[in-house]
Image (cartoon, rainbow, N blue to C red; front, side, top):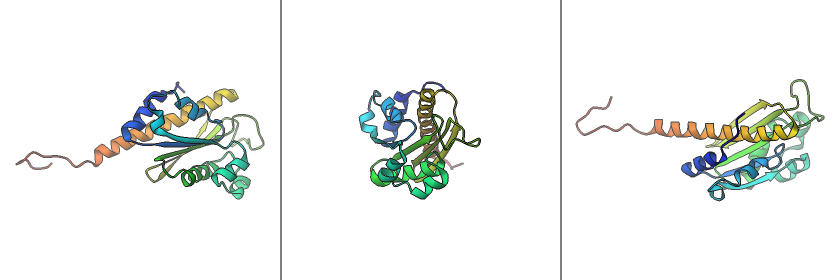
Length: 180
């Protein structure tokens, strides 16, 4: 994955007049920290909460104990609940992102969910966009790649949003001209 252009991402958020909130687990706050140097970030980033431990996920974001027991802390279900919990506790943002995954060996690693498996949920315009990626590398490389995955998916969604807005605009006709 190529190095993310966080400056361009923040500019896209500014162009769309959107704000962002993050709930980070496996990235340990890296996604928010990498946005910090970008021009205009103070108008975009409302906040980020790091909920690395399951207790933090439960107490700060309302992730259900049953979800953690059934699916593990590193699952799409947990990431979805993290995003919804963030939305509940920081209702002023336009975009909510939650990320969790396996950046090192642990009890929840399985053949179907090996180390490097990362889950991202993005809430935008009333829709939940879910992503699962299997990344490779050291723990530090996995965190970098997870943050880059977030930025790439956000840019994709903002581009699609822009295309959708253009397509939804009524066509204009000149006086005396029939619409096609």
